[in-house]
Image 1 (cartoon, rainbow, N blue to C red):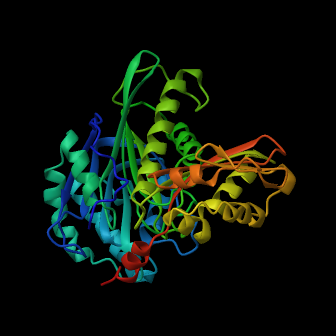
Image 2 (cartoon, rainbow, N blue to C red):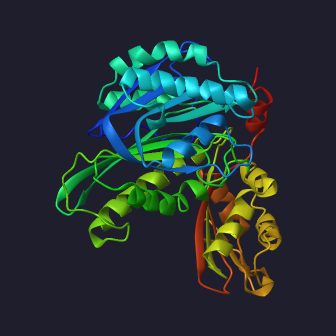
Image 3 (spheres, rainbow, N blue to C red):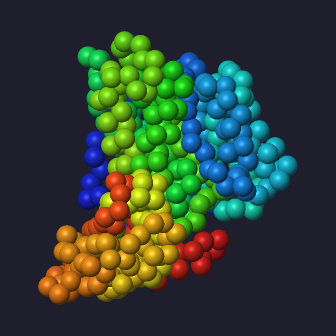
Length: 410
């Protein structure tokens, strides 16, 4: 598949995390001549946190992860691409268990220490017989290198056109800390937890409750603040582990002052991964950032931003480079949140458009039209009724999106 025109021009350096080993394999579940299976393993039990889909038709691997998560530790994460193992009944649960048992046997620990994730077609039972024979060699060949992280990011792709991997280096106290994450996502992307698959690791020594607090908090400002098509997947999963390889002062709470730099770095990493997913939105040609301010409260600002970001009329206008700002007015009005028509201010590309409930007399549409020709589109909406703020990232909606999804099972 042709690489997205919004893809980064080059892959930034990726840093291996001490205590994390990875490997990939090709199973042929759906894709031929490429790796589609990723194993991340740890030489000892590590603290684990996760944010999982709230879909009421969640996949079998998501159900499995909920159980593992309740234990607070894991020793491996297995992810396959090409089959979501969702809406597959008892047979799907059995396939999930067989994969976990194969990893556990190869690693020498209990299946309850294995996290699982699957992505791809819904309604087809995962062919575990294509996966389990690869597990012993996968486990034996795991390694902690930068190249393995990039291979892992590539293996978990479905309709993604580029691999997504990001690293940050920070400190806790005076101790250097590494955070590295990979993600996949391109379509069926809408906020309702994490909107895709993501795997983040750090060498910090953080207890599971602290890790969970950090992951949940920043998910709302990153993976839960993006939308491609308004559809939430049955398989959405973000997992984060802390290997405790770094020696730093104990951290008791996500609000500890000593964790401030780490928290900033983690938030930054998660936002970058989330925006990469939007940049790889199926058929996308433009990245759209929607900044909402002056709303009744933050949650209201977010819902207004999503009403704009999920509007097919807004997204297609931007795809056509049409400065049709009236569609933004429409989206604000339909959001269900408090708004005052006469207080609403809208700008595109920093160019003010509305004032006093109407178009500004000095508005020059040619300047907005010029902005629409670019790859990065910025929409600012100020409601002037409160202190609520939110930022949402989305992309345009093009004919290519229809082509990709009409042929998804072909």
